[in-house]
Length: 459
Image (cartoon, rainbow, N blue to C red; front, top):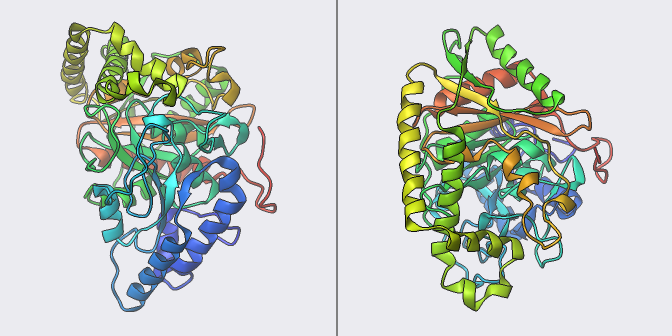
């Protein structure tokens, strides 16, 4: 920890309890990392330095008095700027939203009750959709492995902040991949829990039937520790043998050789641990992916239809273009999308009767260059993003999914796989993720030269 970046959250928590560090020291290092790296990477919209230090002092006093609130006690965290915190307004990175301070969201209240220290509100996209505005008033979230590239979205700052050591874990939201995509692009671990596992009260919604809140952290064990607090998830038995587990391997994709090799090597690790690999086809893959996009756009438009005409130019071009596509959709289109979601859910329940988890690459590309995200008209370039990620499919159903780093491409950019489990079975995918990470060290790789705090690798 001397270089100002965190090891794992669980290792840091152990150091706290053994008296090898203090919460104040951790927060001071988090503040220094935010100044050194976070400003360059566009990690934060708003920092809570003074409030975080006060919370850290309180956490240290409580530990000294024998009061331990749990796995997040004294641990610095970042919270996505779609989630209300009492310290500052939730902007949703939009000029449209009123700058009013709101009470803590339910997930924030759980973090505070668990002794967690919230260091600030992390960057996102406008209302959690679209791509960054390179010329707007908000920080642009950059990739810690190459600052000309995107951190991924929309839980951008929560992911690049973990990679940069600005906090031990970040809280994000996921509507079509917004936890898993930035985790993949930044080389960290992200969990989209079972739908409604984590309460969303106090979170700015994009699409209510798709949105979920979850953690981004260094590894699967860290995600489990956060979920114990925010999702009341019992700690998984990480010592249990994996032998006999069946993992369905989805190969319904085409990608560059670097990713293909990394993915095959990753699943081979499980096979070496006694896991049985089974080739599977995801049911209704293109249909469910399309249904998720129709649902997200339609539900998002309903939330913004009153403001869009009156404040058209206050919305980013990418946001208004995305939401306005709902005007070309009918009620029948939305109804058909829900029919597809229900049908896919039934088919997947049958499939999970034969396998315990399903794995595929999280994205088919590494982090894209920021200047490729929009076209000449300022609209989102879907060829650069949506068509190259595997994340939206799983938002159409309720299943939990864990994104785990599996290596790097020839340019030094992170690659990732996603592990989906049966509904309410976060334990199995967290165990699979932790076992893989116990046999590899990709999740421990850092984007910064540990001898130079001012250097960021560019590729």
